[in-house]
Structures are given as C-alpha cells and as structure tokens.
Length: 344
Image (cartoon, rainbow, N blue to C red; front, side, top):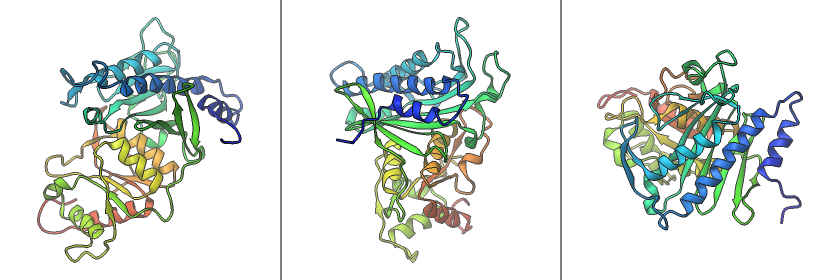
C-alpha cells in the first residue's frame, strides 16, 4: 500500500491550489472527463457480453465505418460535458463540424476536442483502445457560442491534454503542460475511483531501443523514411541496428508504451497519404503535449507538432513522437533527399 491514497479528484484540487484565484471551472471540467471515462470503461469491459460490438452501418466524416462503441463513447462524452457551463463548444473526430452547447445551458470559457474511442475497430480482438482529449481556452469573446477560431489553435496553446487507455486496467494520463508534468491514474473498479499510480511520468533516459511503425507500408514510404527504419534494423548499409520493433496498431497503446519505456512511435506520410494520416487536433497535438511534458518531442518530420496552427477541424499530419533524441534522428534522415520515391 502507498503511504497515502490520492484520487484524481484530490490530485486536481491540489494542483488548483497552486493557482490562487482559480475559479474551479477547469478542475470541474477534468472531473467530468474522468466521469465519462469511467462510463466508457464499464461499457468496453462488457464488450462481448452485451450488444456493443460491430459497426453501426454509418460512416463518419473521415470516411470510416462507425463502430457501435464509437457512437456510444461520443454520446457519453457530449452528454457529460455539455450542461455544466464549462465549455463554449466541442469538436470530435467523429463529427464534421463544431458541436454547439445547447442554448438552454450556460456557456463557458473552454473548448474540448476529443477522439471518443481511438482504435475501436480493435475491440473485437480484445486489443487496448483509448480516448484522447485536448482542452483550449476560448479565443472568441465570452458569452457567445464557440467558433472555429476557438478550435483551430496551435498545440502549444493547449491548457491540458491526455488520454484514457482501456486495457488490462483502465488508466487516465493527463498533463497541464511542462510545468505541471504528466500524471497517470489507474481505475480501481472496486471503489470506482481513479487513483494516482504514475506520478510525474518521464520518458526514460536513456530510452529503450524500440521503434514502432507499420512496416507493411515500407514500399509506400519516402527514401528517407525507409533509410531511417533500415538504420534501426541495421540493414542496407545504414549501420545502427539493435532496435526492437513493437507495433500494436492501436495508437493510444503504442504511445502509452513509448511514454513509459521510451523509443520512437512513427506514423509517416506515404504515397497513399502524402499529407499524413493522423488527425492534428484529436491525436497529434494532445499526445504531442503529453510527450513534451514528459521530456520527449513530437514532430511532423520537419517541425514541432505543437507549433503547427491547423487550418481545418480535420487536418491530418505525419507524426514522430517519443524520446527527443530519436525524434531528432528521424528529422535528420527525412531531410536527406534521395533519388527514387517522393521526397520527405
């Protein structure tokens, strides 16, 4: 047993005390996210026993089949967050446009951006999946409904970001930026509380020699990306070697491992997706902030992800995330122009 038990509520209150004059609205917003995570966790853990598996028959704005659990998680988060007066609007990976706050509810000063259930297609084979969230302070005047400008802010302007991973245990990991650090909470189902289990998470230094990427797409990569992976594998005259390949295919799971063990997670651009595949607002920026606050880096291959100002709600990007030295190494390889294939 720990010498003291710290619930997520207690932790948030302790953090709030460091900011004299705080209204408590931001803390309450984090409580509501934790509540939504508990409800989603309960449903995910019942998958296979109740009718939550499979597709709904609909297609989302990304052109992807909507899973029943996607729709459930979306509804849970929206209903948990829309009435408390903390938000001026929400945006989801599953929605084509801004999700307004109903007129009967008070408008707040924060914006919530989220991926309700990342990797949900893996639930049928019992692979860990997750929820990703990001919080911004509104950019528009107070008292009016949220607007596009509130959502399209650079990642470094995030007030908080994090994810929930639904696996052998349910964990909520969040940060309020570099000064606040990254903290992980594990859900104790016997009492229904998230308990602090991973305080002040830091990416190990030196990191584990692990790289994570879907190598089935090797032939579609730029020459620089191919040579980077050749370096990790120690083949084709690239030197290096000694790295292990670990790829789950559920982004939250791969990033969670990278955060705790170190290494490099990659989702590069390729000939089929020259602009990248991951969503800037719902995946790259929030996970990038978590990684940076843990001492790592997140890049699109040439610049820091947190510096990019998105132009649309569903902008996509390549992503290199993990130990800072390995992200730097990836950028060096991608800067080299070689004949054959498209240039990085």
